[in-house]
Image: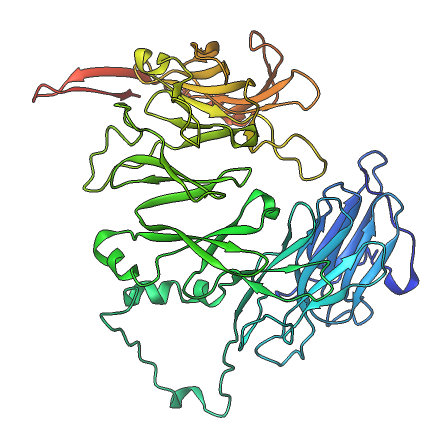
Length: 526
């Protein structure tokens, strides 16, 4: 949808072409909305933050106003880009941010505060607006049921709706202590105290102090409940959590290394416990204990999959039954770094993607791609038919569809069971790079599309046509963007390094040799 110039409103006329001087740090800057078809544009002054709805028909922004321009409006405003109308959702001074629309572009939420300017600790609230209404209302404040004692809404937390629009996620944090202004600075002792039982070394504490001070903790509220209350999903002892299935399921996956952080001082890492936290009750269920590795939820939310670096094995946890299955039982192939040469456990090669309805997960070994049934009922399949290992070509799934935030499209978090997908290919012998095609459901060699002495990357497909753009470059040719329909011919769209033609540019070639100790080695000669 192309924005149109908004209708004039004498009270909220943001268009001002007169210079106002350089904006101060606390003031916003110009936001220019331009109609790409007509070239007309409208300028909104002192904008601190803005966000488009997913369908592009709504633009919300906050304006700070200016001390030098007393007539400049302040608050939160909503522009309908089709009709050109402008609504004032909140009027007056304040700080507003974290704007988030729901999936259907019908509801809006954000955090904000209108505390006195001299108040050191600001009182943030969560605001909510149904776009059919003219103003935004406070939906979460300091007195909201369920909010822990001496906690409040965080101004640093991310605001988001679940995909179905029923839940609203936001951040909370412990109340900060205001600075005692009755004591002058030179009377305050400045001493850093460290104890050997502290989680982190003192230099690390000092380095991360600002980040830790802004940390927020995920919580949720049922938007349409007749008796709404805050459900804290994380806290100081369980600080990290991720939404599952875009927040539509009744749990989040949370993790913590609380009580074991001190071991990172000598091991460089920590083990973590993983929990399922119910978004309706806040109830926590531990599902993984002391994992040296990483765990993630499947796109459909039916499984939690994790790699144990101590054993180099892949596991799944069935959310419905609580059953744990080792996926690579009986396989001799390694799914962790075969060339690991550091005094630590080898890391996993990783996950490519899942198939629809969580039916299978695609996992990498050094060269090939394997399909595993997460319930363990089907035998693992090397869907690239060992082609990668036999030819020393590393094959990896390449996602060619971007998640478009302005319109609905296919869910690209998974692929269909027999989908023809794209693969990146890297020849470990020749160092050539390119693309392959592969049917996910067939055990056969992938089909070569293009391979050459360049780095092929960032392949993207047009939504409604077999047209592709990609990056290609090497030492001789600077990376540029190309467009093609068949990879037999291509058109160059960019010229990123035109000044190169003014120099006697070098070349690069692959060389191999035997070291004095008899080892085979290789490198690039420039």
